[in-house]
Image 1 (cartoon, rainbow, N blue to C red):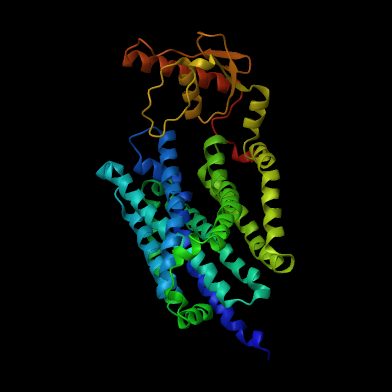
Image 2: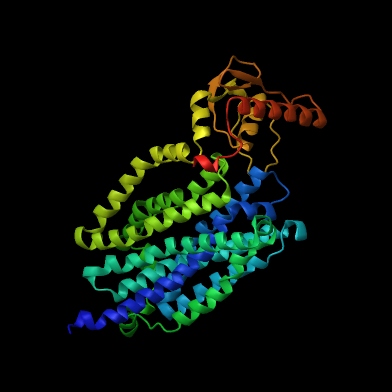
Length: 446
C-alpha cells in the first residue's frame, strides 16, 4: 500500500467532517433566505407588503456584508489558536443565532425591537459563516495533496448547495405536515429550532478533528505568531493577490451564485407570481441537479488549471443570464409572457416630473403623477417601460391600447390623495386584467 492510499481514509474523514459542519452552517444561513416572504410579514408588519419584502431581503443581505469581517477576524483567530478551535466557535455562534431567530417575538409582540433583534442575529450568522467557509476550505486544502486539491476542496463548495437543499427539504416537509396556514402562523419557526439538534451533531463531528499538518508545522516554526493582517494587506507582494482574489474571483462568484439561487426566488415570487411552495420545489430540483457540478469542475481544475475553469463559468453566466430569465418567464408564467408581448405596460410622463423610485421603508410620499404611477406598478410587481410626454402633462399608464391617467397629489388633502390613488390603482389593475395579465401563475401551465 503506497503512502497516498494509506492516508486516503483519513483524508476522507477530514473532508466529510469539514463538509458536514459547513453544510449545517449554510443550512442555518439559507433558512432565512428561503423564508423571506414569511419573515417579512412577521417582522416588518408596519409597512406595505412590497416594502416589507424588500426590508427582509436587506436583512438577509446584511449577513453577506459582515462575512468578510468574519473571515478576517476568524482567519486571525485560526492562525493563533488553531483551525479546530475556530471551527467550534463559528459553528456554535451560527447555531445559537439561528435558534434565537426561531424564538424571537414578532413585530406584533414587541414592536420595533423585533426587526432590530432579527438584524442582530443576521449579523452574527454572517460573521460566523465568514470564518467557517474559508476556514473549512483552508483546512481541507492543508490536508490535500497538490494533485487533487481542487477535487478535495470542491466538496466544501458543495456544502452551500447541500445546506440549501436541506433548508428547502425541511421547509417543504414542515409545511406539508402542519399545513400552509399553520406554517405561516408559527410553523416557520420549526426549521430554525431544528438547528439545535444539527448543532449538537456538528459539534460531535468537529470534536473528532485534529489540527492540519500545515498548521502544526507553522506553529512549530513560529509562523503562527506573525502578524497576519500586516503580512496580508500591507505588503504589495501579498496584498495584490488579495485584491485580485476579491475583485477577480469572489465578486463574480457571489454575483453568479446568489443571482442564480436567490434572485431567481425573488423573480419567481414577486414578478412571475409563482406560489411559494412551487418556488421551493423548483429551487430544490435546480440545486440537486447542480450539486454534482461543483465536484466535477473541482476535479477538472486539477487537470486543466483553476483559471480556465473560472473563466468558463464567468463567461457562461454572462451569456446565459438574460436569455435564462426570459426563458424562465415563459416557462413559469406563460400567461404573463404572452400579456407582456401583446400589451406592454408603458408609463408616459414628462421626464422632469419623474424622481428615482427609492422608498426602502415605504414612507416616501410621492406627489407627482409620474411617481405615483410608477409606485403603483412597482407595488403590484409589474414591469414597465418609459416614454416621454409633453412638458407639464399628467402622466398616464398605457397597457396595450388602454390608457389610465395618473393623478397629482399637490394641493390635495391626505384623504383626497388616498381616495384618488386608490382609484388609480383600481383602474390600472382593471386594465391589466383586461389585457390578460394574470394575478398569479397557473401551476397547470408551469
